[in-house]
Length: 327
Image 1 (cartoon, helix red, strand yellow):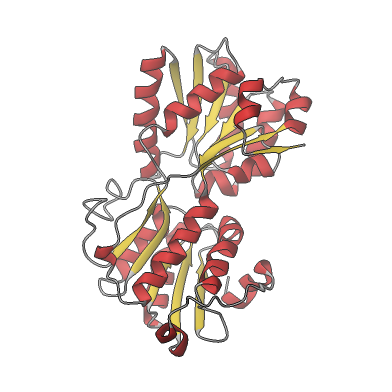
Image 2 (cartoon, one colour):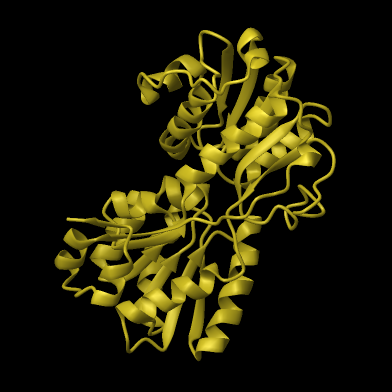
């Protein structure tokens, strides 16, 4: 997907330039390369990214050009697309949602500054050696914290108080999944819950994994978020309904599409912060000056329409904590 096609998804923004934008940035013109694995979720979140740049005084067609490339869910295309973007000589290269785009960007250049928007385990993926002191030309935002899995398990327990066995579905080919599962295992042991790990790497794997939830006796399911599961979110939501599995998803896109419940970092905030990182680099900061930021804002979204369809009563304790209730 080229930039012209992608911009049709974003629509027109009308945010005026703020007074605090630096005059030097306003006078110059900049080029940002944007590399995405899957266009759907980037279209959702990049709207915020572009809007935040506008608020900071960087406006497409005036002093900013965004060069967009999407692998259209084909990860093998990422290295070539990253090289294409580097050849366009951008001032900053931005890696969209997930780890694979960030790794392809890092392989493509050791000189162009890189900002990744949402990587679960930047250290485990080999992107940086330290969150607090990134080195080289890459920095960005991590979507994982040590206690996230524990909170998600707790919410499934609140949803199904009798739950003693809970399943987790993830893509083992994603570095983030390995870190997340370690956190889930630690949290499940502390809570006295048996954790059933279900792995899937293709759309064809999903029906049998949801059938396995009942077979192993799990009372609920947590679906981890990565480009694969997000791109298949409607299939996963339909399978959860068909198998009547109480499911918590690790991205709000699922709840918005009809999933029962999601608890996850506020990715809209993360993409906004990524725009601020880009702005700081254009203003003279080095990537190594900017620490890898972990999420500080989280969202609980509950879809009451889906709960009613599944015959599930959402506990008042969860409803009271929800950031958004979809009715």
